[in-house]
Image (cartoon, rainbow, N blue to C red; front, side, top):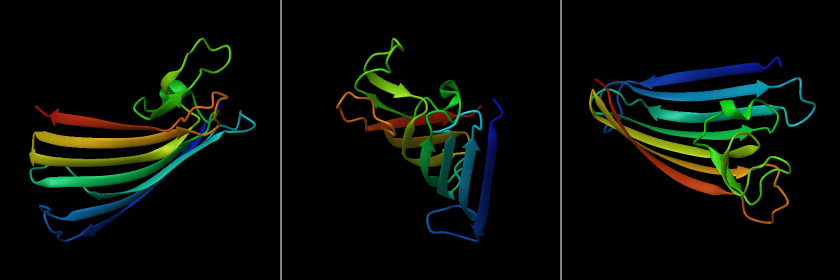
Length: 155
């Protein structure tokens, strides 16, 4: 498979911003991938905006991204396992039952907030809201909302 991928970002920096230490970056970003070996459902993309950048004492960030992962756009084992949806039944012949499943054939939103009270410590919270693009014939709702809390200590 010859995967084609492109990503880009643009950052604008404000000299100061309320409740933020130092210069304040605003970053717009996007990514696109295409699998020409698949005839359909072969595209994935994401785009978003990030305000601030955590990692140094007194800094924070707020990020929003919208993600679409076509079913045949890439190997489903390579995508973020935190981004997934609910499957009422597994795909026919897959041996996989109902339940949460990450991978491809998904679309949704990710909102992340992080704050660094110290240079070596960052606290973050991320909310994922994802749903299946092509529903399986289970008749159940596929949308899943998840909250993930992180504490990162660098040493």
